Amino acid sequence: MTEFDYDLFVIGGGSGGVRAARLAAGLGKKVAIAEEYRFGGTCVIRGCVPKKLLVYASQFHEHFEDAHGFGWSVGETSFDWPTLIANKDREIDRLEGLYRRGLENAGAEIIASRAELTGPNSVLIKSTGKTVTAKHILIAVGGRANPHPALPGHELCISSNEAFHLAELPKAILIAGGGYIAVEFANIFHGLGVETTLIYRGKEILSRFDQDMRRGLHAAMEEKGIRILCHEVFEKIERGADGRLKAHTSAGKMLAADQVLLALGRDPNTDGLGLEAAGVKTGIKGEIPVDAYSRTTVESIYAVGDVTDRVQLTPVAIHEAMCLIETLYHGRPTSPDHDMIATAVFSQPEIGTVGLSEDEASRRFDELEIYRAEFRPMKATLSGRAEKMIMKIVVNAQDRKVLGVHILGHEAGEMAQLLGIALKAGCTKDDFDRTMAVHPTASEELVTMYTPSYRVKAGERV
Ligand code: NDP
Image 1 (cartoon, rainbow, N blue to C red):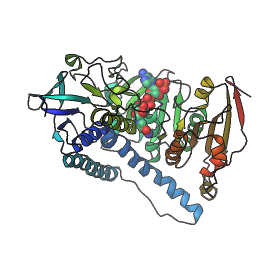
Image 2: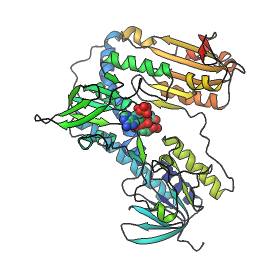
Image 3: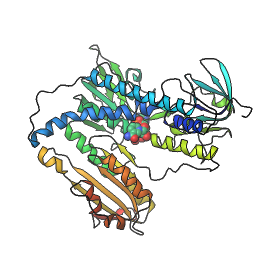
């Protein structure tokens, strides 16, 4: 044992912090992990996991409708929001228990308190007022919803945190933002029967995705009945005499709803963390810049996950934590690999994507081959649902390397995971072409698009 109380002190019990603490403790290191709220972090407690459960819930009304075409008569149906929320909460409690037990079994000390840095090797445990020391400190405190304080009436709005715990399902909701959270919640609430309007400042939703995915999803959402207003923002939110919220937009509209959800990005959770006292520098948004090995500007202090604002995704935080353990305790300095991260938007239909969009690829490469298919999935033939599936492969014409694959449609997220392996391995379009199709599936389209739909040369479609 060194002169320190701990080998590793982790601040934050989310995906990144828990993984690092569990692995380090499992190696026999003396580890403590402090969490002021609940173990599991944003992903488990108020993010990916409860969101996916709500997505499932919101899909049933379409399943009931689709059943008719397959000969089923579905009797009267009804939906009970409190039941869904209670069941979801029970599952989250179970998962939190697993996170805690994983830490305990590995031998990490759990500290149920806020912790703040007081120096390069010291941390104040707020609940006890005790200061402890550690050879290394890991900051894994994540992020929080941007409250958009510049918007008059923002305090009347909710974020995704509250959306998971509303006492009752609103009749109408307005959602600001065009990113993952806004789009996913718009589909969830609409699927549960809520009159839903999404308002986005840009030209088209999901600015970081391929154009075909953006336009295709926009059209599919409108077809379902979700109202999407682009090039528009909220200018003021106020409560009307009838108790409902009234939102004034930049286009001069006044929209009324029971809830207004702001999904305008997430900020690093670094306020009051004692970073200055410890000498850790922060960036413009309060994020903690780190080097290639997740080390902050202070030699003994590391940071992983959303707080570093590299790529705000759960698997990325976990990967960064695992690399850190390699670096610190296995003598193998390992820097996280942020290239070719497959990701999914759990909209309805889903988007699954890996690699470069057509626009991004055309900025980086001289000539592209674009393979694109748009078709009605087999299930929609009997259900009668007017839903299209779009698949797109972006290929570098020079060496036939597949640069990106983008899918809009059912199970696109599941497909993206597998495509992620193929693209990570550096496969070419020829590898796709010589892969036998799995029939009948939607994904067989990915290996049967033999001729390019079009080419892009010097940024121009030809
Ligand atoms: P995103 O960064 O995805 O989207 C933020 C949205 O808010 C963008 O459309 C942005 O517009 C808009 N915006 C930002 N500031 C303003 C403003 N001042 N006025 C108007 N609009 C504004 O963030 P989210 O909050 O949706 O999600 C946070 C993160 O969580 C994501 O980055 C993602 O990594 C992660 N996440 C991942 C999920 C998944 O993997 N399925 C699901 C949910 C979240 P513009 O595009 O013009 O910048």
